[in-house]
Image (cartoon, rainbow, N blue to C red; front, side):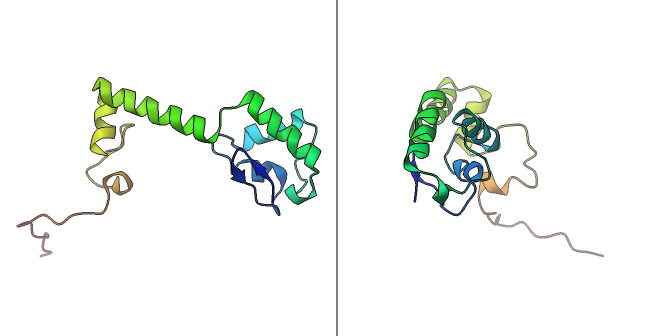
Length: 126
C-alpha cells in the first residue's frame, strides 16, 4: 500500500483516482501531477514502482498544500472570520449555512437533527 502525504492510497485503484484520496487534490490536480511525472493515468497504484511513487510525492510537495497544512489554513480562515464578527463568521459560529441557502426548511446537515418545539401542534387536514 502506497503512502503519500500521510494517506494510505488504495492499491487497486487507478492512479488518478487514488490521488484524490489526499485532502486538497481533486481529479484535475491528480491528472496534472501524473502528467508532470509522465505516468499513465490508468495505471494502478500497486503497479507503480517505488521510484515513481517518490516522483509523485515530490511533485505534490513542490506544487500543492495538502492534508494537515491545508486543513490548518482552512480552520484558521474560518476562525479569522468568526473573530472579526462578520456575517460569514456569525453563520459559522451559529452552525448555520454560510452561503445564503434557505433555512426555513432544509439545512438539516448544518443545523443538526430537528428538535421538537413544546406546544406546537401539527396542522390538521380538513
